[in-house]
Amino acid sequence: MFIEIIFVAVICAIAYMKWINTYWKRRGLIQIEPDLFFGNVRKTIFGDTSLSTSVLQRYNTFKVANSKHGGIYIFTNPVYMPIDPAIIKNIMLRDFSHFVNRGSYHTPEDILSMNLVNMENEAWKNLRAKLTPTFTSGKMKMMFETLVEKTGGLEKAFGEYADSLEPCAVKDVLGRFTTDVIGSCGFGIECNSLEDPENIFRKVGKRVIEPKLSKFIFTSLFPWRLLGKLKYKRSGNAVANFFINLVQDTIKHRESNRIYRKDFMQLLLELKNTGTVSDNSEYISQKSTRVTKQGISVNEIIAQCFIFFVAGFETSSTAMTFALLELAQNQDIQNKLRKEIEDVLLVHDGKVTYEAVMEMKYLDMVVNEAMRKYPPVPVISRMCNRRYEVPGTDVVIEKGIRVHFPVYGLHRDPDYYPNPEVFNPENFSEENKAKRPEFTFLPFGEGPRMCIGLRFGLLQAKVGLISVIRNFNFTLSKRTQFPLKMEKTSTVLSVKGEVWLDVKRILK
Image 1 (cartoon, rainbow, N blue to C red):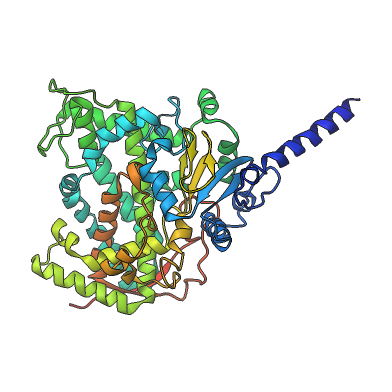
Image 2: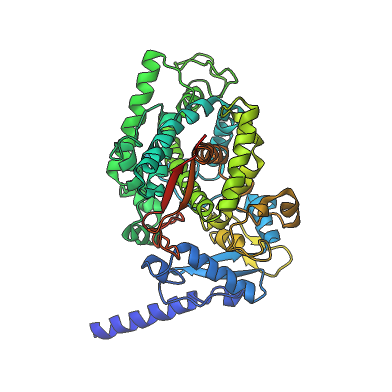
């Protein structure tokens, strides 16, 4: 009798899952047929297909069907995927109040999760308002000198490869460069990863972004709030303890010794002690009686420093890696970029200044094209927080349904970018940008929840590229294998293994 009951229960469970997998069909929306239990993510989670490839395949399926949108499933959870730029604009911007959250949850028990990316509703709104002044162009100028100083180590690293005539492991070198930049601009700490690849900061950074299939499956199946009660930390105890202790010690040291530095930590300390970020760049870190509004807590500082570190070093190093890879294959583009750099810097007495970087229009086009062809995040997520009728359609998105914006698909659509597999900075000339619909270029997202640190990320990538392109010429190494293989279990678009380039000094 017991076996019969189990058998009936299994049959019922299978029938229920099959019924769930008709969610979009029952609502009259085209869907990609899911696998039982796994939905449309089986190949991705088992490493058969990269996330970017999966996104492109789904996008093209809906595009070929001449549909503005479609439905997919993450396990048994229905996910709405719009591919029409007008619908994407409505959700990301015009009707943002229906999609305030990313669906990336946080718990008080996991301090690192309490960052701006994961915060929800009013808590997110309040924190965003406090942090926005820390990423203005004025604050970027404040940190600019520190950023430029780090290019000395980058030039030295590439110079050693050029002198040894050995192929350069570009991905690793640029990862160490951005780690040093974030360490200095974010924490006021000299990591020296370019000198010491085994530096603790570099090790922790690799550990944070290391793709782990078991973690993906585990956190997809269990509610975050339940995981919080179980004291689960998504980054692991070792990483959490490292950042908590690091930030607490840094705050204590600065406030005890009244130390001032032009960095992100300084701005967070000002928020903590006064509730605002002043225009006075000579603010001294200390407990102040000039509190004008509620500040941020030490735990909030820890969480923001963590996401600043993770997002800053990985996405910028990835963008620079792909840019150099493409420049190595397109010597005419590389030479044109080098000429612009030299021409602009000549006007600025050979110095890399903030104003000089802003004047380099072709550099901006090159960086944008690198992020177009290789967007750091192939898909962006939002969560519907109240019933939403998609304008111009009969489709209704219910509360709790996740929305995926197929960034990689949009960026590879020939309707918006002719010959999308070809690296062409002219895609971002003023004339060509004006021809494209809005919301077809989303490397940082769009709307109120677009990446708050995009200015810093772009500035870091541009300064790094200026430093190396003006001093070195890059060509493909025989060790670089084509077609490129991407990491299949990573959420950030990244080449599997290394990117090898040959480096030669520019004789001046």
